[in-house]
Image (cartoon, rainbow, N blue to C red):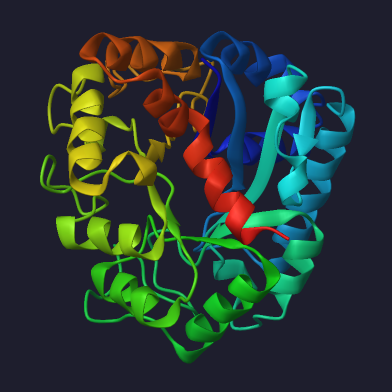
Length: 319
């Protein structure tokens, strides 16, 4: 079954490798994994270190990303409007929804959102884990939420057609979103706190609030967000089951957040990497589909989980 992944940091890898002079990064390092797992579309986000990044780094990153997409034009199709979806499903390519994971480098200049939109950005989170000029992430002061610029940014994103991602916000900022947003938003890669008490996971009241907007939650495969000691694919399936029961099938999707290609020294690999057993990389995505099928999920529900829920959300928000 073909899958839309709600969150991948592949564009961060593209920028890092292209800065070192490498080309065709997606074809060389990622395409075989995506194809093996049946991933035919994703939110491809650019992450930059919020502590050090400046706006010029965003501009350079976007240039390198577009160079990469040009080189992979026969494979990757940039989604800019609702009619752009389907290249991956119908023509065996990959739908690329370009996103930003955090907007710290933007400072308080929210007009830069218009430039990002012009670059093809169609989803974004206000913060990564940090507190910045717009809002506060999970590592910031728990009592600090939105700024006035953050409120303006959400309104501008809605007007432009950029889907808001709340995955890294602290609780105060999250509830500020619910007071500000007038359109559906997503948590592209978050899990249920009730099953794993990690600060990146969302409490039931937050999950229900996302549903009330018409939004959705992409279930995250990162080990630490599934189980504190021995995470495996069964914990991932438990998260899906829990959220489907809590929210209904129309508000749950897949947002794997695979990290196998990030921050690894190929010459000196770490002795032990904390991974989710049987769901380590995008190669293993079909393991999830097979397990859900064996549990009795109907075909039409699997289609919603794997791609149609995200397509519905973008159809509603994109121009």
